[in-house]
Amino acid sequence: MRAKARGKHVSEQDPYRAARLVLALRQRGVTNIRVLNVVETTPREPFVPEGYADMSYDDLTLPIECGQELSKPTEVGRMLQALDVREGDTVLEIGTGTGYTAAILSKLARRVYTIDRFRALTVSARDMIEKADLRNVEVRRADGLLGWPEAAPFDRILLSGAVTVVPQILLDQLAPGGVLVSPVEHEAGQQITRYSFNENNEIISRPLGASKVLPLIPGLAKEL
Image: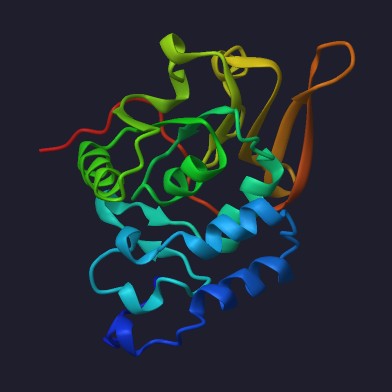
């Protein structure tokens, strides 16, 4: 069920709301210090839809344009911890949404490429990223399930929406030793799943716990 705006002005909120969000992340098992620090210091209000600003730091799924959703912060934190981004990494994100996750990734990685199938979302996300002066982020409207071949290989790939099977074309865009993280539909339900290389240079997968996000859909969205 979607949350309803309560109408409280942001300035009236708890000044420790970012710290409370970090506490929620810790309670969900997120212990990566880099991830926690960046989440705490990255303003979330600009990436939350109008009318929901007072919920910016609540652990809620919020509706955004194009019938999509802004994932719960703890969901994002768990995926980022699994991704284990290093400072020198080049990262591909599939499913830009409002640009919030890309903004966090921009402070964890050297370079971020982010894709969404909706024109409205890429336009607004690009605007927010430019206003935040995040110069290491590039936004594109495209079919994210095809990746970004000309910018490959990527050290890390994050699918912000769920798939039934991770497309081979995305795994092929991973750099040696790279990691891909995606919510995947398993028999036991949707799970955050980490794909990485073993000692024989073979891709192996490991489910890391339940998740609940919208599916990624192939192709470009039809928009007016």
